Image (tube, rainbow over all chains, first blue to last red; front, side):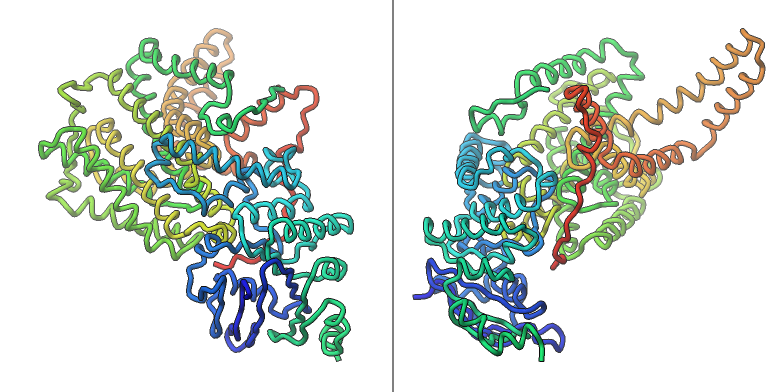
Length: 252
Length: 380
């Protein structure tokens, strides 16, 4: 039984078919990687999955439920979290405050309770902080918990974004180029985190990645995308050696 | 440097960080409580203006500073609050009921303006709020059965449960009370998910959305809350100014509110108060300088025989007395603040504080804007 599946997913921007009949599924606890040259439609697939774009055709199913028409802000509550290619952190806030936003979907106090800061709101606030601290400890971010994002290194920001996504307690984690902008060592750390998360929490991970060392290290299955269509699917090694994939990357 | 050791989660949530904070805010509280005993009536009245502008500042700060939605129409909300409150009182309602109804009405109008505004961002939203303010000002001048148009509308001193706030001193405490309530309530929202959602929307709408924040709902809350607080300020404003006319609630007033939060420092409640002090006290300060500069320089000239000093003095005084100089000085200060201190007065205060707390080790680069990395395109 697959956790997530996309069936014949398509979207057109004007006359351009950015994603053209893409079908795939992701099992529980699987690391599923999408590779492909620039402009192949990888991030577009992510934006379709998080419902930011309206698909022009196809179906999205998560945990047996059709989510093709679910509002974008409901996606997180279902258990799908994501990171962004070029970081979308709340720059003026601290690491802790960023992580607390991951608790937004778990919050059960209403506006009036917040407004008057009733004991219930205080208890919920403490509970949220406890949950966020667990994630902070998991990633060893404690020394930076009170640091504003603006003064963190790029590598740390990537980790913070991953941590923020985890605060949602997702079952499916979407990582858009987790290694972009990272050095070799930092990429290795990232690979270890992804492996860890999958093993410890049984998360399913969908990942867009260019760094083949990371792809080879963590992926169970890889698909290659070109011009909005899947051109190869299989193990990391098989996809990289596929003549069609080589042609897509090198041209000709 | 003061280090804060954290031993409980509650420490993060408290309004006052630690005992040192409690001490300083306590001192401030004592000061503002005994201030009317120390000052002339005139200055007590001017300080009440600071409090009313402070409430306006909090209203603007929620929308502009925290949610990142720039409004140039807040004078309209102030006007709606002021006229509604005055109208209800004239029709025999008790003060508290009139106040609650005025706030409710402004909140509702904020919601109504907010709804179409949800589809707009940036400059388009600002233009829409500006258009709203122009329409509302027109309504104030035409709807004579309610507002009496340009004939104006007299507002009596507030009478609450039989007590008349007739003196400047008593009205000062009334304004102070409402400012403290508004600050407390706003702080509550800011330390709860509502405030974090606002900040998230300001910094990255797409990330906020993917974290489960319903953009339309939280933007509407920000609009409605901001308008409601402005309506409350409007009710006090009506009593303070004593005579309502449509030409009070102009675009210039809206600009002044925007100036208030920018000069004070966007994204902090301290900034709203500092900005209010600035906006409320600049006109009286200019008025004082207008009289005292020529006088003191003439006295200096008479004493020393340097007649040119007296000439300069009267020239400066004459210049300050010219119409429009006040607006010009406001504009000049706004330009200088944006160029030299984008973080506003509160940002400057933080720098001064950091300078002394880390004394020989202060790094000027601490507040340098961090190199911004490429961000993905805004999707909406």
